[in-house]
Structure formats: structure tokens, C-alpha cells
Image 1 (spheres, one colour):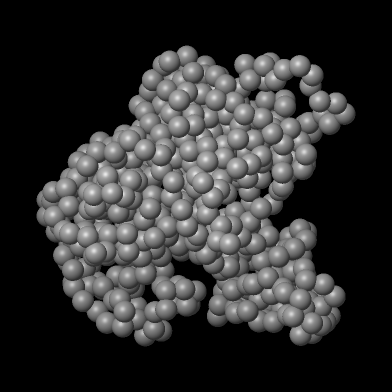
Image 2 (cartoon, one colour):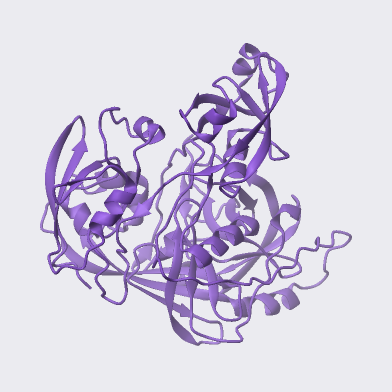
Length: 507
């Protein structure tokens, strides 16, 4: 039976129940999310890495823990503009842009043109992690938001600034202008064990702050098709729409995860919820605050899990490890001597159980780091050293969410990546096609209205050739009054021109 995942964000006028699966690729890469280049910040997140006491459970009440944590769990309300393309009464929630997160532009096809802009409100949760107002939440809570409002438990309301988003892990950081705020310290999520008691805190269905209890049902959940980088903590604590971005805490009141999704046939809680572990959330947050983007390591290989049949063919003792199916020429792995057919069993001192574990471990490795690897080749163990690199990855051409109305360039809301061998394979682009591949287009952008979509290759911008993602960024960084952009695009075996007119989308 097909799994149905529900992303836990609520929309005014109905609960968002975005259903579907995204198949995460096995290529080890990294992602970049742009912000102002001259903006630099730092963040000092309170940590408490001591192991939770497992000798005895608290008796009587969790009230002391709840009183400690709930002041730092906030309600997040967003305002965004979407295009109305169908009768909402006939298809409730289908107009929500999160549907396109699962079904792409097909959600628009077959419906009349002449779309009219519509104001839409979203509801989620967040966790204050520093006294000066840095808040962890989910990317899908604030994605596309023109305005973000944060309400504290004591009733105070703030307009928040989105400091950075990472769609690959579904983590975002927002900031409010306040001091001496209550916080939730972060625990070491690696020390969490199956069976540990946990509390989930958030704002389900918009009814107000709610606390539920349960246990850690499983760890290291992945290959769910929810995000590209998955390492979920699974819990049976009741989680429902509106809990997105809320806190999953241990019995000491420390943050071990950010509530994100549920596995459900009905859309309601059925005891299978997923939270992004605090270790991953912290790493992403620190990178977003410091650099404005997330930099992940790159090995330059295509990998897959080892099945029993493959283990037999490759003369392996068991099914553990990550099988290399292809090596990118002149990439880090190629230069280190890795070959297709190698099975990676250890990376930088960490055992590699499967392809997902290798993907996560490489992604968390800082570019430029030289690490040791162990592989099985023809039944024998071989040690290699590889220098992890940074792939010139997803660059945002311009900020579609600029809240100050300033001119941020053209092709707002479009994200591109270098058209390397991996991208050629992923998007089925012929080798002779050059340019920058579109990886994401904001659904309410002028570029989307003009027909630009994920998988298209931008070959020229205003009659000037595009050879890389960096070229595309430079060609869209202009301050002229002309907001019309001529773009030459390759798609489906041929090239054509489109005009992206953002003159009516300013501000």
C-alpha cells in the first residue's frame, strides 16, 4: 500500500494535507540558499549534551518540564500571495503552493488562465533557541511567505525576518527583534535511544499551544521520500497539522528534534510522526546564520543500497555498505581512485550501513577536508584518502521573498545549479547542451507564469550566454528599471525563448 505523508502545516480556511512521495536521489551533493552577500552573523546556541537519566521515569506529572519549555515554543503565522486557478470549494487546499512541492507544475495544467492573486495565511510552530531571538522552524512553514508573524506564549507578537532556508533538510531560521527571551537548550540527538520518553509541543490546528507525550519509536529513519536529507526521529507522541516546526523534547526539557511530518492514511495522527534531529537542525542553522546558505560536502559518485542479489554478485559477506554505480570524471572520488563497483564500508571513521548514511556523512563533511575511506573491491578491503569538495550547487538568482520591496535583480524565485554530469543524468539533458539547470521555481513568480520550470536549462539571459550557475547569477544582478528578461531555454529536446516580465511583481 502506498505511503501517504502529511506535512504538518495548517492554512486558514482548512488544514493543509499535502500528500505524495518524492524519490530522493542518491547523488552525494550539497545545496546553497542565497542571502545578502555582505551580511554576516553568528549564533551561540545553548547546548546540554549530557545523557538523559534512564534509571527511573518521573512520577505523577510532566508539568515541571512543560513549564520550562512551553514559553520558548512559538506560533508562526505567515502571509503569502498565490494564484487562484481552480474552484477551491470543489478542491479544498489544492490551491496551496505546497501541493506543487509534491506534484510540480502539473497541479496547474488543465485549468483556465487569467489567474488572480489571492492572499493566503499559513500556521506553524517554532522554537526559540537563543535569548536574542533566533528561532528554528521548518522550511515549508515559511517558504514563499511575504510576511512572518511570531506570537509568544505570553501574547507578545513580533514581525520576524527569515534569516535562511534549507529546502533539502526542511529547516529554516527566523529572527525576531527581542532580548532575554526564554529558550530551549539543544540536546545531543545522537544520544537519544529508542524507548526514551518525549514530549511534542506546538500549535496543532490553530487551537492553541498543545503538549502531547510518547516515546522515541525509532531512529535514523530515511528513504521516506519526504526530504532529500533524511535522518528522522520517529515518535508516537501525537503530532498534527500546525505542529510543523514545533519542539520534540526529552524529559529534561531539551530539544531533540523539530516536528516535521506524519505518516497517516486519514491526515490525522496515527502514532507515526517524524522529527528532524537536533544535531542536523543545529548544523544547518549555524550555516544559515553565518553564511546565509548551507554548504555540504561533495564526493562525486552515484550510489545505491546493497541488495542480497548484489551482495552475492559482488562477493560481499552481508548487505551493508554503499555501492558506487558511477563516478563523476575529475571529481573528488575519481581523483582518489574510487571506481564503479566499489562498496564503501567506512567514511571518515564512520561505518557506512547504506547509501543514505554515506550521503548524510559526506554532506556533513566540510569542503576541503581530507578523509580516509574503506571500500570493498573484488572482495578485498582497500583504503583510500579523498579530499571532499564543494559542488557549485543551487544558486538563487534573486530573492522572491524580499520584504522591503527593494530591487533584488531579475528572475526572482528561480534557483539554478551547474549542469555537470550528475545534472545531465538527473534531468536527462544531452551532453552537448550547455547552461545552468533550473532546480526550483517559486510557484507565484513571474518566471513560473512565463513557463520556466524545474529541469529546464537556461542557455542565454538577455542574449548573453550562460555557461554556469555563477554566470546566471551575475546576469540577473542588475538594478536597471527594465524588469523584462529575455531567456533562451532548452527543454524536451529543443530550445525556445521566453520573456519573464516582473514589472507587475515588484514589491
